[in-house]
Length: 408
Image (cartoon, rainbow, N blue to C red):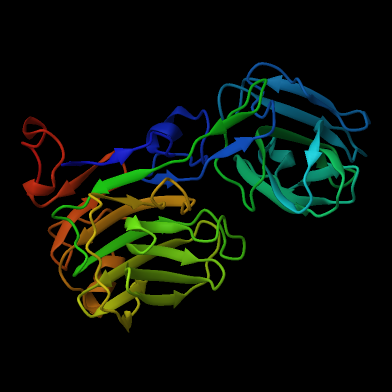
């Protein structure tokens, strides 16, 4: 077994099972969420202790109650009861702090219908910058299960002195709303929830690295990842969300990423004297599953998306890389995160045909095995623990006594 180097800040099955924070996936599903560092600016997003910093919007008869009989995270949530004819709800804020001009803010919250009679009713989450006209809202149709809703806006006006969030009815109706996991962040999309209980809280960046000796080489190899996208291609988390990077420096690297300026998957190999690049244009929605396969040999670079025929470009720039590890899901230095869930990762040192790319994609969300993968596979990471299965003892980082049950 290969012990991957983890930061400990990934969203994993263990995180989900604890139900304290994270992406809210209801059951463990064998994936690692690779997310950038964020700060939840809401001081009481989870109601674990009280309803501090929350109030009625206009006090038109609504009631706010902390309950422990239902919740999405932790042990409690807030119940908002709005009477017939009401159009208001619950307010967080107003928070007094400078709102820099042109910052992109996102508010997200988990909502659930209080009773069956509330299922299908529409409420909204509303984010506003105090002292400016900048605001945004999202219509939220309540369901019998917890569901996350978000709204994103650019606070374009100068002089914003603060901000607030409302969870409210958007019509004159009696409705009961359960609220949990409110998060406000300076990001173009909602990232996994960070629990807050009396103060703002932060999650540091995730990072996963694997040894490369015996697993990939700069002359001829391939990597494949199965992703559940955490964002839509029209609302990118960063300029270059990175899937795989083996790098000495900016002029000597092999890198697989998504170019948000052109909406293209991009594989590049650079040796200081020049760069070979192959791209594949793509669009996708939030939570779409995508298989990305990148391959290279001494004369070509290739990309296949969801089992498509390879797009191939000539490229003979082969770096002599000294780095002994490569990053999966972010770039070296723990930046440019893919901000998505990795279902599995595999790599090898052989060549891949179009038919073999389709074979790899056909695994879908089922973890592939070394025995069934084409292209001289060297490693498979099922993304349910911090270890992967490798083919050669030379690439194994764990002590001998921990490897006796490994598959070779």
